[in-house]
Image 1 (tube, one colour):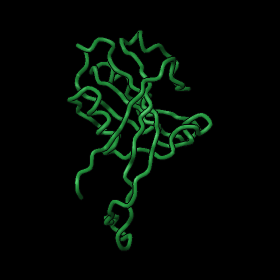
Image 2 (cartoon, rainbow, N blue to C red; image 1 turned 60 degrees about the vertical axis):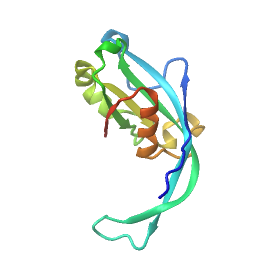
Image 3 (cartoon, one colour; image 1 turned 90 degrees about the vertical axis):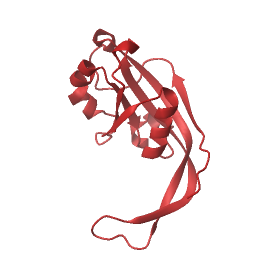
Length: 158
């Protein structure tokens, strides 16, 4: 497929981010929290042929669709403590809220190591009232957006 110029924009939001399950002050851990809207155009794909039992299916680019979603960034307040590793979590909405179980279970390790964490609101139900997030970005769109902020990131996607 021919390479296309892709436009993705990131807008920082002000005020505290609505994460319902966080009951501690990140500043006490030496961390800051920033909330961003990520918007752009995602490539949609369509299947070629049948979906087979082994789960390896052929796809091709089909159409493009706009998306808007939220990124919640937790990182060391002191950039000298930043390890260069970013852990990316697709937030879980099984309980009807935008939850981050990986952060909940791993935050002590993340903080000790000086890693950054990015929670991605990837499903409409995770956004209050469904006002944002017409469609979730692909991993490629997310990786491109992260590279555009402060390279070089080493990125772990859960």
